[in-house]
Image 1: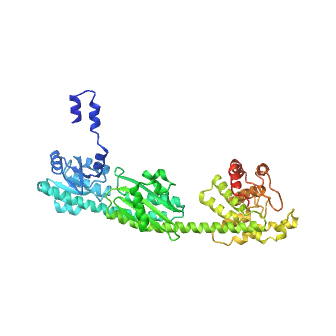
Image 2: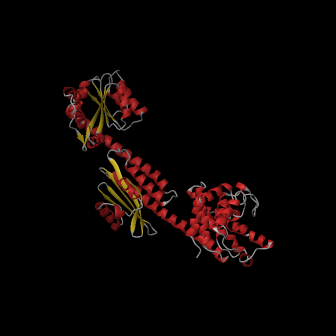
Image 3: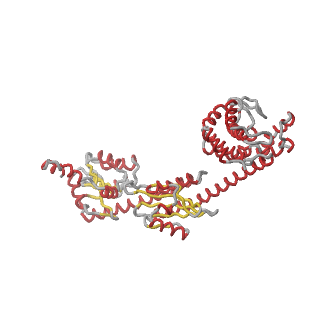
Length: 524
């Protein structure tokens, strides 16, 4: 119609006419939601009549969108392009006497599409007897064209759409439960709280979005953790994405604030229209929240999927916080034991804290992953634990040690190793390696094993650099602190002798970072 009008009125306003006829976003959304119906028939009149009879048809508030094909080959191509087709009104005889039946076989066997409702229509029932077709082919209805009055067509389409809807609901529920199982496995992995928060939000959106289209499934949401008196956003999507790290109540609109306050006061998850507020208190007293909105026509099945997922989410939140408690307890114990040794030898307790911080940064800068770097961070404070077995007369001596005294002092590495080595805990096994090897040298002249180069574990090589840098920078019972410039020159000179040359380069390239750590954890 536009083309004809364009030919009749070829003036400067033509572009405006074309622009006016562009579908609006609302029309696009309505088209996306319409039930797709393919009319496959080689007679154009059948297409015309079918569309005319069903032109005002609606089922559950959604209209029909017709797709037209005139041959079996064209139908196969179209159903492949539109796997979400609800109904196929299929003629048996098109380019050949059994082309329609071949289409059925292609859809069910090749495409493995069990959802589309296939209504076989024939004007020549003798070519495809009903009993034979129903038995041999996976179709859902069989109609002779002569019996399809307007009322019967309405009834047939309604029954088919109702069946299609129910099958899709069952399939979505099945896929949702499968995804909940898969998601829960990922949620229960050992991970940081922020990573967990992002994962929880992503998985819930994915579960709710099964089968939806981006045109009418735009999600806003966030996960938050209580810090002090406020909930702080850890992960977010949609309109809340810019507010990560901010207080929830400071950034959300009044209506959302009211929903959140209601969930908090009732200490229970809340559904409100297209909105879900998940409230997850943990056994250690922390409180967590998940807010999500944006999907239309939330069904009872959607709510049930959320309830199931939320049960697992609550347990996962609990596990994350319990794990954090264990990690913090481990860290505190390791630092405390390390500090006990340093205090006994009249050295500053902050030495082990500085060594831990520097070891972590050096490990990350050297390319170790977060998990391994954290392991070194927690284990390195135990590097001198073996000094508990060294006599005070040697440990606290203010001057140089005799050769015999030095031999006794060297045993602190094996004492520490023997204290830790039988543990089954990874953190203590790591501490055992560090305790044994942190006095080895790259050139093989260290003690007690005389290891050389990469025979020394990377954990030992990293801790050695951090330990010596800090020890030379600070006062000890046997020495005054060195100026920073002298310490840096010493490390540079001992590159490839005491220290791993590659680690030394990384350390010196980032020397300001290590100086800042030393200054941040000053001696008391």
